[in-house]
Image (cartoon, rainbow, N blue to C red; front, side, top):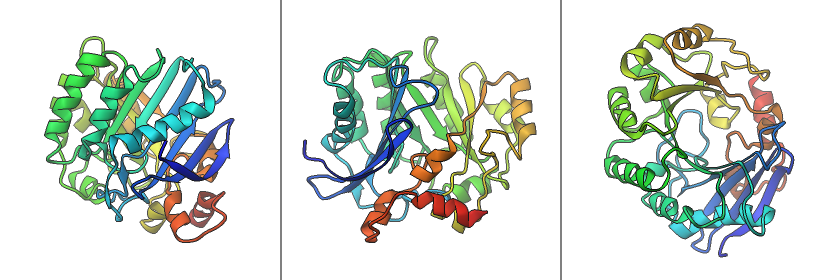
Length: 316
């Protein structure tokens, strides 16, 4: 394996973040995590990078602004294999073995992600394999999503998770948070309805909510079919970018919504499954929820542990 892992942070009972460099000289960051109290044999999540940097520059993500290039199929697979080889020598005996293309980079702008998805099916003895692609749906990604639909239909019916990052139902605020040309909600609704077949998992609409998020349930209910879409609420995590833009989380550490409870209640009343997903508070200290340790490494910091706990302290 050509990937050289330089540092890791966290613990084996919750989450670990890895920083490495590929043979092509690109910095990568990837994560493995558990969901307490579930043991690893029940659920194990790997989160991998698809780019060296990211061109999207989302408002609460530290990865934007330093895009160099797309990672190759081998560079992405090396991240996965490193984490698998640390835990398993044979079959990956995990009931829900989730691999998310969601750490650094916009996956729909990298065709190598499709190559990885082709290879993953059969690469490991892993009956619980559940690939997951999370995207902001940038313009000019139509060919990626057309091929993704074909791959899902050929290889992953009923065991693929597609997530669109929406974050706001207000057009101007959505442009502020995701400052690239992208699909409008109508196009996401149209594509997602095609993607979710009779036996497939529902397409996820993700909202990382801050106290100032503009969200209207009527917009979602008008455009999206609750039989094909679910809504996932996550916190705006404590990153340097979210701190600089004063984006305070709308979700408490205990998982309760401080703001926007009406949004959730109305969606549920309209028939939507709504998941409020809050990680363990310890994950913010580790930095596995969000954040970017690569930048800390490149800046010469020798002690990266707890880096994002410092960010959180600054926001209170």
